[in-house]
Amino acid sequence: IPLFVRSFQQPSLSGTRIDNDESDDRRVPCYIFKPHQVLISVSPRDFSFIGEKHLADLFQTLYEHKLEATIMQNSAINFSFSVEADEDRIPRLVAFLKPSYRILFNKGLELLTVRHYDEDRLRNLLDNKEVLLEQKTRNTVKMLMRDLNQEI
Image (cartoon, rainbow, N blue to C red; front, side, top):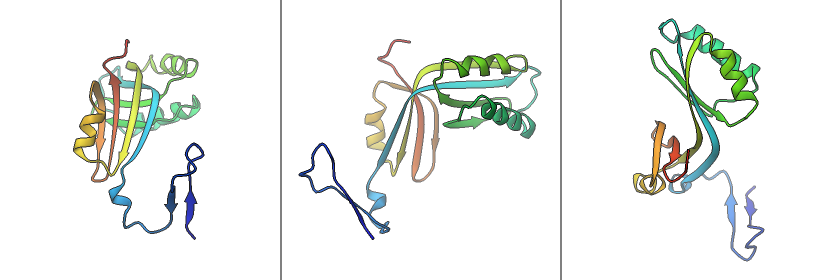
């Protein structure tokens, strides 16, 4: 059963049909903007590799501090993730992690997710932006970025 959705702001427009026909989905890009992100990068103080034990501990710590990673990336000695800015929870998280990890973080970021992206549109969206973390698949791109026009 199709669902027809029209704008409350412009009800005279035809609107959108939502159904299970996926044949035209690849033509329509979908943009999700998540402002107020903080990028946190942690490295073990003992210079060990980030392994399963570290990752399990970090995810448990995020859970206990009621923070959800919106994008994450790990390398041999580093784990980076972003969370929504929270003036109470993030300082507590950093204080908890500081004895075991070296911590770097960047505030005032935005996470952009684009499904069915194309390079030309991405270039336009990235004008005056610095990408700090990026993940790309065939259909989706996620970029954590800073607005270069915004004061830090």
